[in-house]
Image 1 (tube, one colour):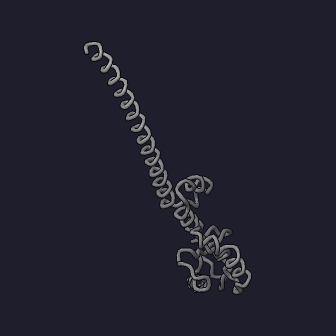
Image 2 (cartoon, rainbow, N blue to C red; image 1 turned 90 degrees about the horizontal axis):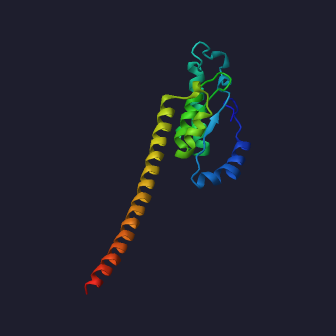
Image 3 (cartoon, rainbow, N blue to C red; image 1 turned 45 degrees about the horizontal axis):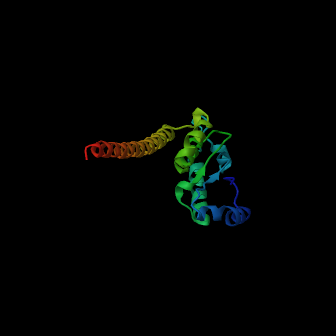
Length: 171
């Protein structure tokens, strides 16, 4: 959604008909308020620090609150950004990384330019990778344990048959 637009009728139709069913199925969604640099007063943009001015920031917060109420979503799901000004992109990346399943996180983060990766996202991807590695190691260990027990069981059966044969000679 454009940060400086007021009408939501088209967004609401798309939300109810297309987006809401996957949300109900547990899929994550984000409301991205794009073109944040255009929110009034647009001439207040702080170019030196690449962020909205005080009044713009307050207006963005009000806009985000309206979107949250209108679509009944959590605060963290409404993210104002400006791709033109490179504003708040790392926050959007963070939210996406934390919402993705572990097996998708590393692929996603590798596709993001380094300037838009935060330490939190990198740490989360590392955590997810170690968790997946741990699961693989546990699975391999379980399979290995099963194989060893089958081998021991087979060896035990062979040994018992062998001993029965030997004892049969003396019997």
